[in-house]
Length: 464
Ligand code: NAP
Image (cartoon, rainbow, N blue to C red):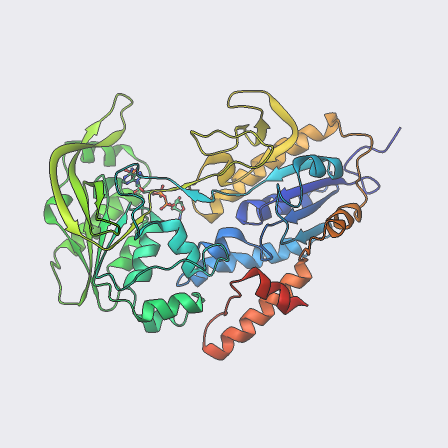
């Protein structure tokens, strides 16, 4: 009779794919258990860990990135290993993983973006905000992109916090961005920026905005830039008032108050303008081969059959001249090879983290999800903690009845040996710490928190 799984003699072996917040919180929860002894191998397709904390959080929001210190503490726990530069589906298949681990968890986030579904969306100069974000953050997948910042007017569609980030990066003085860890090529391109007007377009009203209070307040305080509002957008109607009274979350009322107080400032006198327009939906991106404008429809708020407030077009339209469009209307998960996928929801179908063979289907034994690929792209970094803990609870509940294959290659060296036999140059956490120190050292010389490596080959070369 073999030892039970989860003891010192026979630890629970877990693989986690995706080293963003959800992946790290799941590691922490697994490794801190007293009753169950677990080891966790955390994989990432990049040589660098931390997912959107490194590649998504805006470079001028360094404080948010201090959460990394918690993840470093997790990485210091006994039983933790990092394997960077390993792609799921390329270097390792689901079959490989299930042959080496008792359980596997995917926390791969939401790697693509939602589409507006309007004519002209794919014209040159129309981009998903996710690409711009990856570009200015030095993500290797996006560093090759070119954004023509000779544009004088830019539209950012959507008014969530990603739209706030994109708008701020376009609007902030260069000298302030130069002190951040923004990618060097992005800083260079922004130094030549001729952007004067940024239209920030919300399809519903200020009371329904998805941005949060500090983020909208920041837009009111950018040096050299006015946030300009249209007074008629700020008039609340009966539906707004009813809705604001019904939501418990004070963020919405505060957003309204911040905007109402700011609206009195009018046009302002700064050279750059952020023109935040509410009740405006793009109907068409205009232009021949490149973006030349955006046709917008004026909306009104209506209550749908489920009681939600929706934007409804009035038929009244207008055109604005813009040469760049960033759609910032939400991220979307991508399917993983060999795993079921819910195309509509952009998530892996699951019941509280247990992966199902189809939406509403049967559990797929030993496979779990956490974070945005589990619940969709919502919430802040900390939201992933209870989310990951809930999944780990399900995993631990399943351990007693676990049907692991008898021939499981659970010896710790089996997986690295497999990767090496396939010629995969994996990056350990110690390797990453060397890269980290190099980036910080390079940054110090430039007066920045770090100067990022933005090419995988440069990262690997630096480690040789
Ligand atoms: P989000 O918060 O879901 O916002 C999406 C925005 O797009 C909403 O304003 C939404 O309007 C709008 N939208 C959706 N479909 C549209 C369409 N067809 N036409 C026009 N507008 C459309 O998404 P996100 O900004 O990508 O952020 C994702 C998550 O990351 C959020 O939870 C966010 O708070 C978080 N985040 C946080 C920070 C931070 O804490 N500083 C920074 C970045 C991201 P409706 O409301 O009308 O649907």
